[in-house]
Image 1 (tube, rainbow, N blue to C red):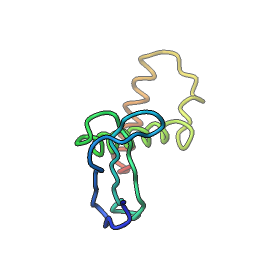
Image 2 (cartoon, helix red, strand yellow):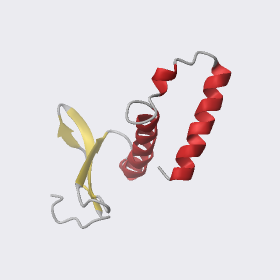
Image 3 (cartoon, rainbow, N blue to C red):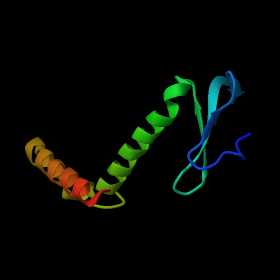
Image 4 (cartoon, one colour):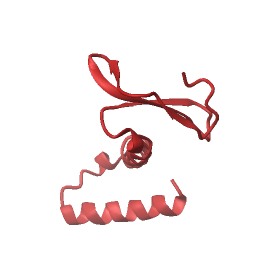
Length: 100
């Protein structure tokens, strides 16, 4: 189905398909950077599935960098919302400057 996709290309299967008892849209894409095949299954609008997933993946990576795979934000034990807000602003700026 998706084997012939080249990096950066995507294909949506026509109509809805039954997957685990639900009718969903199936979209496949070959990732530009790694060439890996990404298959998305969604019951939402298939036209926005790839951009939505890309945005979500960026957020997941940010949370991972701030939490267990990087800064270990939980270990600060900050309770004061003002201090936590300032720390998050500083970390966001640092990540932006590093291009992560």
